[in-house]
Length: 500
Image: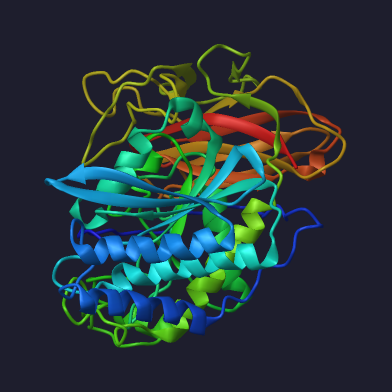
């Protein structure tokens, strides 16, 4: 794993996010044997020991590692490719393995980087992720899994030199092939000796850092969280900060997720209380060092993460994609109505569809970027002479969708991207709310203001609206500056209703 830092905080939903179960015919996820995963780590260690103490890009230990992985997958019935690329004058390799069957237009990829740094054998970073997905792939073969989605596993080269292998793979995929990859799961360091249990923050519920992953990342995050919840292990978010091989995927709009047990960062007292281990010590004290050997692994963390990987693969690969009932990206006018009740009180910053201008006050407030395309729903799209020129003033502004007729059965989900930004002069009286209006009205989402500075950052939400099945409904979005003269901006994009 490359060196970079990440942080995260929390978000508020009024209705719990729900998970769509896989098809009833899907086999239960297996318990991946820890002994098998550790046997692969022993092989990686032996390869490094026999090849100058490392498995780095361009070194013989890396190619030996790639051949070890490929040989096992070939024998298990995968169609494998050793994809070569050149970096720093040396040849690198990605191992790509496709499991036969599944929808070729609906691909789930699972990946981990296989290379180490030159300083050591790289058994936690990232033999651990490589071994865990390898054993998961071999279990797919043992069980003769027949998933709904097409399964593809990947072991990346030269990650430690800047994601070179995964970037080469994504860059050389034709656009049509990229579009077939509906999700990518990344596992980089899953056996740290002083472990944390981190899951990539696909929906930006932490509200900090780089924002959410592409649409669908929230569902990948939730699936992994579901597994850890089922075994009573709390998780915390980790930011899509670009330090591992999901980076090239999310850069082209492919949803991503994964787990991480920590690198050079220091475990806090609160984290030690949550997960055990030693506060004030790095999650991996041997990160990028010669002591990153088979002795540098926490068996419990490795075992839990390997089982989480299998759970995610079995669950996601056997889930039929939801059908889109209705969606709006706001690139064209589709009949949203501002101030539909005629009772709005905001004097400026009313909701409108358009190309937003960026504003800043102690950080980004109105975002000049959208989730897709050039338009979104935004509270006063202009920038004006100052950040407060076109923000919400005077109270409530609302906007309502055209009528949407919902199917009478199935699991119905409303998803959307959103942000609420405000200055430190805000309070909990300010808000962004989303309601569904049918025969009854339900508030399905709420983000409140606070007396702290909150910068604009796109998040995503998905809520169950199955209680409105068979009805004609409208989506009502409200935002308010109700704290007096506070700086408040809000945006919404890519609203979608799906049926499973």
